Image 1 (cartoon, each protein chain N blue to C red):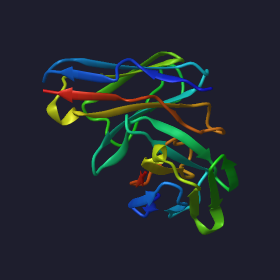
Image 2 (image 1 turned 45 degrees about the vertical axis):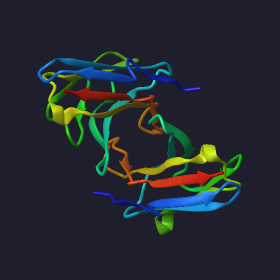
Image 3 (image 1 turned 45 degrees about the horizontal axis):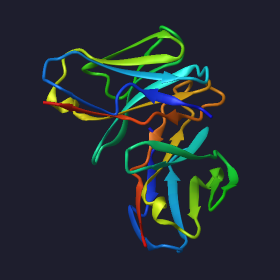
Length: 113
Length: 111
């Protein structure tokens, strides 16, 4: 079974803090994704990566950056957290372009005070 | 971009009832997935079904790609089926891997 894990289920941070959200997958998937989910807005893609050290902007990359130094790990970074970044963050991975079924981690519910 | 519409937005059932959830999409797709979001927020994969019919226990799904819709059937529903069901599609976007999600169907199964 594919397993995608995220470093925290719940996280509380203060405005201005630098926040790291970690995602690890154990199935040697090439593609990894970060989404945020907000009531009324649904799931929105922040960034994705199709290879180590590669990244592509999604729909809402502003205020975020990402890092993929190893194939199995994809980090989302909030350089200076703001209250409007309070959200549910979901990480996903997929094998490669031709087999692109995405598998999701359990999510991190981030609150920025 | 591709549009995804799900219906109904809300559905309330008694335990044991059957239901059909619908997903319409506006363009041809390379991928269609159905997910169940549990009360803790995790998205659970139900089906990867760009075309055809699949079954898994009490759940089955059919995608008619030429008519741009997919259906998720839940039979003999249980309270544990409660949650939000999402349809997501990946269009022919020249290498982009972006899944486009519908707004979901919120299912409540009462005992």
